[in-house]
Length: 129
Image 1 (cartoon, one colour):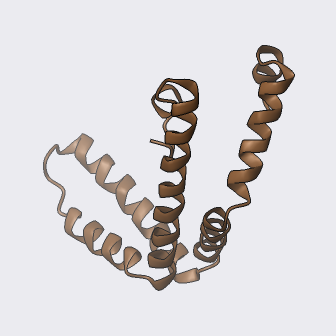
Image 2: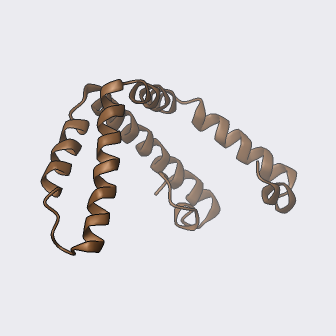
């Protein structure tokens, strides 16, 4: 937990935050998401495509600064992205991610009801809202 949280929140609130985090991380949805993330990280084909995508995106941005609106590489990028998203490990990861995100949205509803405010809208961008 960060230094600000230690100094701002009373012990009971800190304990509740830690318990909430442990509970979320103990769900099957989080476990599946975490495993699928590891699977993608260990998939050589996915890693190779991701690297090609990043390099091509950099090239396209650089090309756009020299010649705005003249990127002939956009079609190639779209093909690489489609190939990446079609990989079985990426498909499984996206499904696990959606299931975990759904759990986080449900958690936001419960926390928001308890607080009387929309919790996710007051947080940094994340999966809760």
